[in-house]
Amino acid sequence: MSEDAEQPETVRTRPWRGRTVSLTPIEPDDAELVQHWRADPVAAHEIGIWPGSLHELRERIERWTDDRSRDDFLVLLPDGTPAGHVALFDEDIADGTAAAYLLLAPEHRGRGHAVDALAALTDLAFGELPMQRVEAVTHTDNDAALAVLAAAGFVQEGVRRSACLHRGRRYDSALLSLLREEWEAQTRPRSWEHV
Image (cartoon, rainbow, N blue to C red; front, side, top):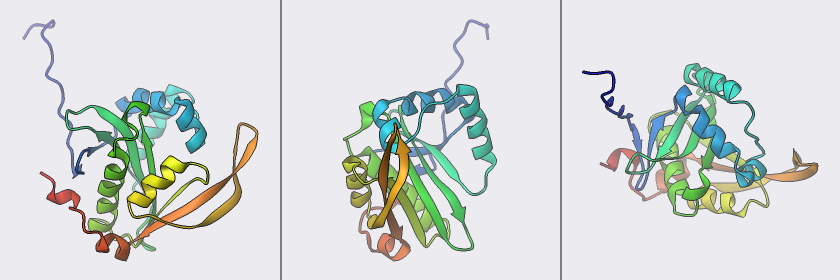
């Protein structure tokens, strides 16, 4: 094969599927894409993050791949287009607890992909891992995130007052969770049922 010939695109595994998205393990080469999503002003405000250096993010993703207390995935559309980053982190197998994280690219928000990605993530937490509780935290005024979490079955437990500083202003954070028995009561198809 000549050096000029195109190399075949690497097909990424998709071990977790939703109705409209699938999840593939995140790789260090995804750092630039994740950094671009984090640079979105809405994401920076609502999630309380900023892009930082690409080098540092790449190193962080490399550490994530070796960290047994977390599982990070890219959210892929059916055609393979990356649409976001979802993670189960702070996994504590002894207590059966973990936290969920979700960041969608601006152009893919509002289409149901977030709820679908969270459903696939909670299928991993409760269907393959021995989790009893998955929690999520967001600003109390992040109506979009609160709606997505509620649609995925998460229940608001309380408010952590003045828990976040962003752009010189204090924000309250809502604490939500999904328990194993609540996940079991959901009637939607599970990740392993999607083909």
